[in-house]
Length: 276
Ligand SMILES: [Zn+2]
Image (tube, rainbow, N blue to C red; front, side):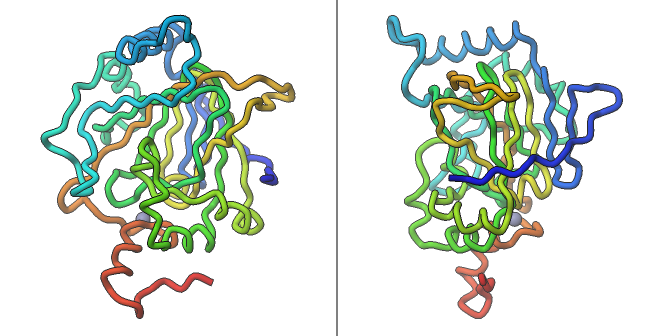
């Protein structure tokens, strides 16, 4: 069972109390990024594409919808032929994203049934731009963050790691097995950040490149001191696909950097990063 540490205190934007920043790790949360009306329209649009079965108000399965440039897992790059037009409910909030110089071109909308989670992972560094956005809607969920450690690095170098990825959000990341969690937890603290419905999370810098993020599968969550039943949740993960010479990474976290791992594989044993 994870020992949870207290989350680091955010800096609250003086001009807007809904904007929380953890500047040291490049993390930002904007509460009420979308309105309740926008949220309702998004849920409706989502299920217009994947209709609910009669009487099934709470689907039991995870549902994923992909928009924009698809990621081609055979070439490990942006597909120029496989493009799904981005729906209006997404394009309409893009002008409100905090980093306008750097807009996402790949969108994954997902429905998570009540109780489901996402294993700890670091999204692939080399193929996606630095800014990763996650818009939550439908209900709140706590997300766990932990600075990656030697055991994460070891797990990411296992030859079978590609077999550990599932077919949804974490296909674009190097999923870390559950077993990797315990030993590193002893070295680097795990803490939770509540992602309220209608909030936007932005990961850059260390929170993007060095931290694992996860959602524990749980039936209930403790939110502001009270135990609440976890509800179905939707998220829109937004990334920008790196192309051509942009592909690669020189981040400060070689242990969990897919670009470095590929260099190690190509460069032979003498270049293998030592993992204590
Ligand atoms: Zn990297």
